[in-house]
Image 1 (tube, rainbow, N blue to C red):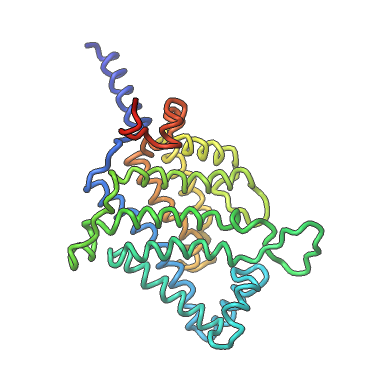
Image 2 (image 1 turned 30 degrees about the vertical axis):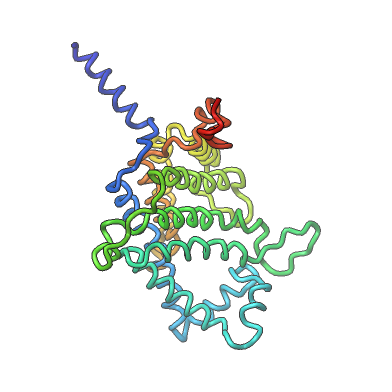
Amino acid sequence: MTQRSTHSVETQTLWEKISNSGSTQLTNKDADLIALILRIGLGAVFIIGGWWKLSRAIDPLRADALVNKYLAPDGYINAFFQDYLFSNGILSPWMFMTTLSAFELFAGIALVSGLFVRPLAIVFGLLMWSFVAALPVLTTPGENIENSTFLTPAMIVQIRDIGLSGFCFVLALMGSGTYSFDRSVMSRGAPANLPNLVLSRFTIRISIAVVLLAGGAFYGLDHVKSWTNFPIILTILGIVLILGHGVRIAASICCVVIIFYCINKFSLDKTLWDNLNAIKREIAYLAAVAVLIRYSGGQVFQFVNILQRPRELFFGKLRETDKP
């Protein structure tokens, strides 16, 4: 075999590794590593966010500013939930913020260390959707805006949190894995008894895709987060992840895009924690794209499979008793 043909074979082999869909099955070792990566990524989000808020809540000089920031018309708790939570006088806004921040911090530490991972992942997966419900928005046509508030639907503004909820539910299925306190202390943490956890990589790629598509489709609109100033790139990457082909390539490009976004968010005028708080969600997304780069996106609901076996994918396989 000539040197040229050998180089061609090596190039083809590398391309196949990059562009294939990965194994249809995940081993226990694979599940353990995916769980560890997601635990670190998600745990970092809650450790950074929890400490950033808690350090302000317990500081008399900054506590009022934190509470006012969250209760403002362009904050994170709308009038409905302010009345629901604080109208009876039992729970104060400061107490709520302090308790929530402390929970985020210690729960984030627990996730990273692998303690109580499954229940915490479920709680955080649901909590992410509460952030969507609580966001103050004004989308009524013709209304006059007296105070600054969100003018984009909450699901679009908080699309990154929706994606994070997907990662949380994947982690709930994965369990804490071998590299965890759940394993070393209680001999627990094994994956859920599901057929090879086939939906895990599909859920991860869809959770990333919705963020990319929202950032591309609604680029430049009020409070819409986009990882790059080139929305067409986000749109193409999102479509590729949805279709399920070339996932490793899309995930690699997405990783570069997110890293550049994080670099551009850093400012020498801010403290380290302020800088980290500005990119905390992106840490989890970097962890998720790392999973896709390593294991690809699986074969669940790939575009080609949908074309070839639409009835099987959408309605399930034919029962044995019903076969002719």
